[in-house]
Image (cartoon, rainbow, N blue to C red; front, side, top):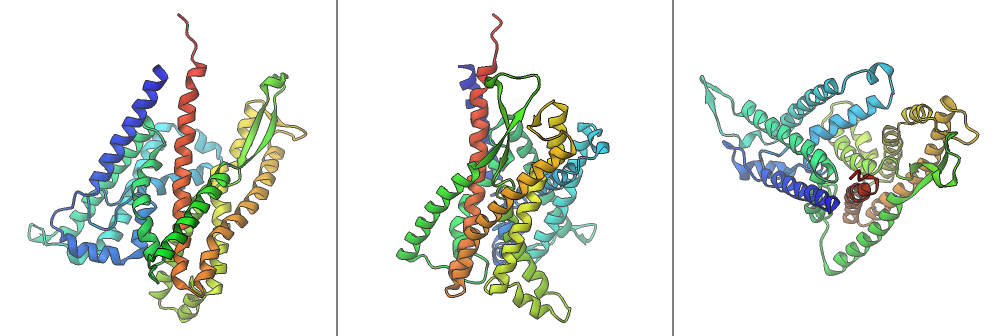
Length: 404
């Protein structure tokens, strides 16, 4: 009964916080012409994609428009630094790390807010203070404030809810699915005819089934412990097939919307040639996209797995792999397993992501299925995280000792 109440309370907290977060994205910032701002925001596909993958709402200038983008970016940076397993970093108190995290999130939030306000600055109405128009700076201030509120909600949901801060991404990811198929990369429009709709539904069902299998797939390496000889005390070290999770899908889409924009607005001589080479509707661009996915899969896999930290903790806990010396050899052994699994997962991810792009060489609108598939994988990953946390909470009562 106690276990049930705890789980119910966490679920209620999650629903409450997600609702507050969702409603906060409808609070329009004052002194802005909403319809004018919406026109500029909706015309920028890159901003729409960035917002979708960070739980932000980028179709209107709202208070919580930034979403948890600054929070996510900061966590990725800290994870990358932490994966280096530097002794000096391990000695830093958690309180100091929390302060640093908030500071970096603030800086990232200011940069992200500046990008958004520059995009819809024509929609700002003058706000004068001491004879100076402060509407631009005031809008950035309000957006950053909303971003810090989002971070606060993310921290509370991690502490008291279920599914961690990633749950806040779910509403925007779900709502963006139709738009993502329609607009896609921002180059062609997909039309929802009866046949097209049926094909998309069928593809989505196949992707969900394949995605569930891939997300749950892992290699379990048996662990040995000199203090435990019983066959009932056997344990293992798991390495996920998709160690990087859905991060390659998330960032590959953003990269391929940002790169052409940067090249197109640059001034060097070969910009037209490079723009054509990385265009997603050309074979060279598809090959480059596949290469980006492979690189991101390895990079984020390393950040997530953190082989050096795992090897050190195994040694500290007295666990080891059979016939593998603890320490450096163990780290090398984990890396070998990781590389093999990541090559396999990279080939699978590329196959899943690239086929709509190849189809798009003849029927351009079908290339929009690539970011749509990536979106589905992100949703499946979040649902898996929620499932894992629920199972953990559900099994906690097995370890409670009643001393009465």
